[in-house]
Length: 223
Image (cartoon, rainbow, N blue to C red):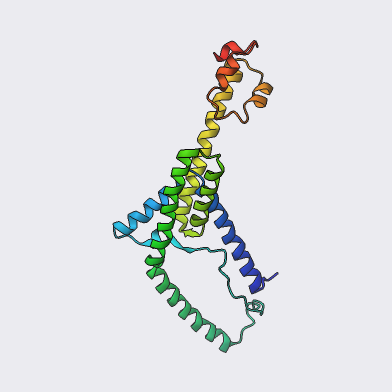
């Protein structure tokens, strides 16, 4: 079943909104915004291309005008219409090539990245003062995400950020498995007890010490 032009645009909007949401989530992960700001500084100071970092912006108020006609059935064009379409495609390809060569506007990029940099500094100060769970810290992180998420990174840069998060999660799971092995296999702590007690205590450095003080058969193994 053929999509209408409106349907194609709606799907494109959903994809871009999904990218925005991922960027917003990634902005909360330590080091990701710093990395992209570093890449921006690198290309602007070393004579690189902005198009090596970003391809544009995805703002929530961007609207694409949707025509009312449906996408034509392939093969239904007349010869004259086909020739006219080919001419238009050549002109469009030429325009796209010029736009790609020119890349993002450096003035707009400076404004956008400058705002992100300023907010990052402000956010780091709040985090240092209050920690990540404080309401002011949560608001500051969201303000940073709101500025960072419209930046449409090129696939290479986007994948670097995703891989940073993926790698951190992988290392975290490895550490959790190691802790479970120490508790269950070495200290003979019942697996059911571990699964009941460990969640929500992952970052509590006093957890194992508190367990070692319990009057249980396996407590001594954790001491």
